[in-house]
Image (cartoon, rainbow, N blue to C red; front, side, top):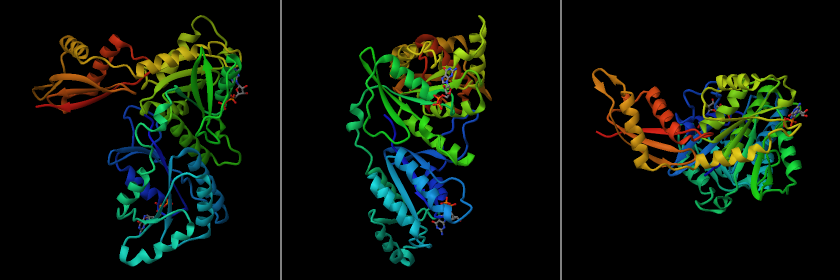
Length: 438
Ligand code: GDP
Ligand code: GDP
């Protein structure tokens, strides 16, 4: 179910952001009621023909001196190698082949990752084509002429990109072990949680195929069942400027979340829930993943009989766009309640894959409509004809109505609450698609 990740790598000014913006179009995934979710164009959902993928722009801030360009490019290339399924390496026909291109091409070739070589700014094929051939010297395959600005050659480039995606039903699908991403700010206790789970469960630790240098997949066995934990803790790097570090940690989080069924959003109980937490949690929310908020370091909080309730209320207030999220108070230090994580994970996965029969859904909708009249506008009243569940992970419903404009967000919320009252669906978001039927 997880979408392939495609990363764009290239020198400054070759056209990375231009290409990213053209491919992302208006399809940037932003859930309107998710506050604090980054509006930076670092990642976007793209579809091409019947393929969907997550596109990542690894290019960060402009380097201020020539000699750090290469080291920055290496850093970018490494992050792409670590996180992406396919890499678009973009060069500039007008600047021609430069030394930094060759060095990065060597690195990409050695990684064995599929690379699509795009030569940008070929605004006219007649004029620039001869210069494109020079890029064969990079030794990473056929250079594809494109013009991001004039949208030329992009179809051929995307065909090349999707040709590397695993076939449906390929090897990736066979692995049905639950995959859990542990995300959160630095120092909230992500590694400690994994280590404690490993220590207490007397588990097998193994390198899972496809693991990357920084996001380490760890297998944990609990009650005879295997779970794969995806840890993003390793992304702490020295000597990094703040903006760059943040960009990279967002890329790590997005790609880890993309591969996961359930996301453990770890919060530091001592520090309390912050805007940065809301931003990170938003990434999982946008993607419709199962979510468990893990409030860690609970041992270090002074408590009375109201503390947990009050704390939960505060977390729910800051993360108000995901009221469905499960919440658990744990301590990686003492191990308190950590073992409960497994039951919660199982439950959330069950809810993510639950299917409700159409007949039952329509009964619930009819009852809901009878209890609260649908909204109307300018004398026209919303009519709801039919509801059916069309997908899981997250559970997705289509509602057929007479006029989409009349379907207010608040009425959809109301129906969602009715469905949740009946079936729970705890830990998972629900998606509603509104279609018109005249
Ligand atoms: P980045 O630093 O790699 O992200 O590069 P940008 O996307 O910011 O582009 C750098 C410059 O190249 C900008 O002035 C763009 O307008 C220009 N540019 C990008 N794509 C093309 C193209 O296809 N043709 C031409 N002629 N210019 C382009
Ligand atoms: P990460 O960056 O999110 O992986 O965080 P770490 O696992 O490296 O933990 C950061 C710091 O918090 C370390 O000093 C840990 O010892 C401490 N820590 C982690 N979990 C707990 C906990 O449950 N209670 C307390 N008191 N400290 C913890």
